Length: 423
Ligand code: HEC
Ligand code: HEC
Ligand code: HEC
Ligand code: HEC
Ligand code: HEC
Ligand code: HEC
Image (tube, rainbow, N blue to C red; front, side, top):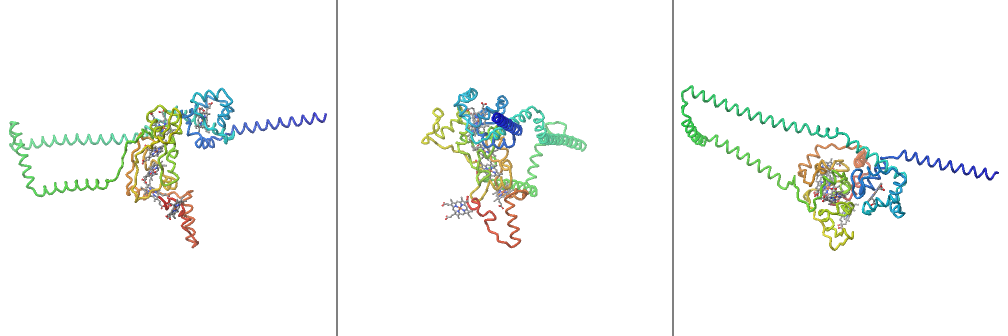
């Protein structure tokens, strides 16, 4: 008897334990944290997935709306290869649908991590759908553009009115002159004679004007000033390549990749936050997607040719590789030192402030003049925010030490950072 009751006790204990664990699991699920999910999604999934657009893999928003079996999804995300190997029908179906492209295995993601990612994708998709449904968003943009259009139309209106006023005044003056001449009895009735007289008058007028030294001097002065300022401006603008927009060897579009698809700048320009140079991505970065996306496009075949990649056999042959020669657009002379991370990380300046609305450019052009005046003007006008800025915390600490007469070394002022001494 004691034995049975012991077994019963053990049994109820384990039932309780399982129930408790399940409850924990459930609450953990209910408390899935989309913010944590976003971080994981950005780090691990964006190379192949977007929320709303199909890339190498399916658009995850609609996909996770249709697929509500979270247990299956968790297994898939943690180890899709295992599901495919086990011939899970759902897994096989999507695998074949995507030409067996094959998703990375994420064994390192815990159940909670996956729940967070799923929660993030569903929340973001919901938000995107709501944003699309709102017509107000477009209206706001239109309203924002409103004033500048208004200003232009206003200016045009003023110009047209001024023109009309000048015409009317001219007419009035002519009539008045006629009246005057009429009064003094000088007006000849026949029109032809009048015209001939005017012609003769004009010639005489020019001759007279040429004799007037003051007038000649004034005209020459105006001419000199105009020529001078023109050459002054031209001289200042030599070697300024603002607006420079060379044709690139591949029709790569920032409007599509950085704009419509919202790929972050540093996905390709990895150096922009870390070092002096923002750097142009190697073609392998493109291959993360274009191994599977738009494989039929002749533009994409230029990438394949450049890498010596054969889309049929999916093999690389480095002997056939021939690097793409992107044409460099922004180029400071060697005598000027410009560091991206100083501006993007420490200065917290957005790329667009210096490069313009790159995400709207089909082809990139040089937006800023890149002259010394341009650098200096911004340095004079931009206010530095020292709060919560590691760079300034260090400098302030050093200043305090200098005030107190303590030992300060260049290392404390950042003198060990590679980019301070190296190009
Ligand atoms: C290397 C590219 C790649 C990466 C990285 C990637 N995926 Fe995928 N994913 C795919 C492809 C391709 C498919 C389509 C199925 C196939 O071909 O294996 C897919 C399919 C899926 C599916 C659909 C499964 C189904 O049956 O409905 C989900 C969900 C998914 N991925 C989630 C994720 C999540 C979450 C991450 C990040 C943790 C991620 N993927 C990272 C390429 C990728
Ligand atoms: C998918 C990869 C990719 C993304 C994302 C991307 N770029 Fe680029 N970027 C390139 C490539 C490739 C080039 C060289 C070809 C060209 O000039 O169009 C380039 C060129 C540039 C240039 C001109 C470089 C020069 O020659 O002077 C600037 C500036 C630039 N990108 C800024 C940005 C900014 C800002 C963003 C984010 C809004 C961004 N890029 C996002 C791939 C990318
Ligand atoms: C994150 C994925 C991704 C990356 C990285 C990426 N692309 Fe794309 N790219 C796409 C997608 C998706 C499209 C197709 C959009 C569509 O359906 O028209 C595309 C379209 C293109 C096209 C237009 C093809 C055509 O004929 O319409 C070109 C050219 C291109 N990409 C070049 C590049 C280059 C060069 C790089 C590397 C600097 C690159 N892409 C990196 C996803 C990517
Ligand atoms: C304070 C202005 C400024 C900001 C902010 C800025 N850039 Fe630049 N960028 C420049 C200048 C100046 C050059 C030319 C550098 C040279 O020739 O040495 C340049 C050059 C580039 C180039 C050409 C390749 C290279 O590294 O020289 C790329 C790509 C680029 N920037 C991308 C970016 C991206 C992406 C961001 C945002 C993360 C960004 N830039 C932010 C001023 C800026
Ligand atoms: C959009 C405004 C802007 C433009 C344009 C700009 N800078 Fe700056 N720059 C800053 C800001 C803000 C800082 C301060 C960052 C910080 O907090 O250290 C800075 C810092 C610097 C520093 C470091 C100064 C120091 O004391 O360590 C150098 C060097 C520099 N810029 C060079 C340049 C050059 C060269 C150009 C032109 C090619 C340029 N900058 C254009 C805003 C700009
Ligand atoms: C205080 C200035 C300074 C700093 C900071 C600095 N270096 Fe140097 N570095 C130099 C000088 C000067 C030389 C050349 C020495 C010589 O030619 O004997 C050099 C040489 C080098 C070389 C050898 C180059 C060659 O052609 O042989 C490398 C590599 C190097 N540095 C990397 C780094 C890295 C990485 C960092 C950051 C962790 C760094 N340096 C930080 C001043 C500096």
